[in-house]
Amino acid sequence: MRDADWVMPAIVLLLLQYFSAIFISQLTGFAGRPQTFSYMIMALVLSSIGGLAILLHRLWRMWREGEEGPIERLRADTDPAAVVTYFLGFQLVALQIAALTWLKEMLPWAIPYWADPPLAAFDRAVLGTDAWRIIPDRFIHLLDVLYTTWAPVKFFALMLALVLPASRLKAQAMMAYFLTVGLIGVSGQYLLSSGGPIFYDRLVNTREFGALALRTRELAPIAHTASEYLWHSYLGRDTSIGNGISAMPSIHVATTTWASMIISRFWRKAAVAIWTFWVIIFAGSIALGWHYLSDGIVGAGGAVLCWKLAPRLLLRSSRLNFRRLQKLGNHSENVSPLP
Image 1 (spheres, rainbow, N blue to C red):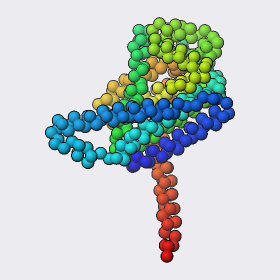
Image 2: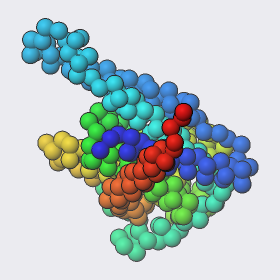
Image 3: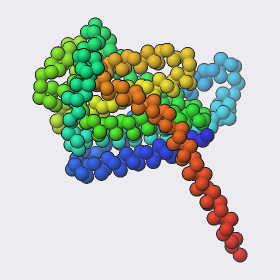
Image 4: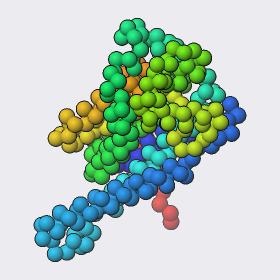
């Protein structure tokens, strides 16, 4: 299977996201625009750092093996198409994050937050209390710090997938990522518009989560600072990088589920470590007040569903391409040669 087999469907999915975002912006009169260029620059920097690390690792291995012509060997071993796909993949991810953030910023203006009370009620019905209360205070500061490692772990998983040679598993992994963020993320946001426990009282005008706010302020300074920044950005309609409030589903849990599936398949020795990390992110999303229990369940379940759905979409896409090529071939055979 070629890398083009997942790149083209991913581009189609991205176009659908941007068309949807443009339509919603026109419908709501939202003046903000996505910080697409900033995300693309960030992706270029990160992918370049990752590429440099891979290059240095290969040179180090050649030095240990006593390679006399490392440059010549690099030229012989390097596939230009694979290098292009690596950098292109990161740019596509950047474009998707920009679209997702733009859609998230417009969410309360398109569909005002309404789902927080039923989502909180679901937690209480299942657990007998608010989900955040089941995580003891002694773990909060550690979870506050570890939760910030979500981004580098996701970056590592993306880099791992993109440096692999073209294969069915690689195509499935990349297609599953774009489906998870683009399909589950966007659909969940707009179907169950919610802000999350950390914003509950300010959105619903109650004091039900006052104890959570107090605990976050005292024991989780990173989450507290981030939530205040997001709230003031929401009030000011700020469209800077990383803004937007949305709880359902948890993209942190969804993408960590995706990262856990790909890392455990390509690097089996790290399976226990990555799934332990998944537990930490799931627990942190609840304990720090970012998400309800159902947000993480939907995020994780959606990621698994997209992983299973990806091969079918790829197969359908490849069949359509094959039929298109057949038609082109038949057409060319029926055309008379020029005199």
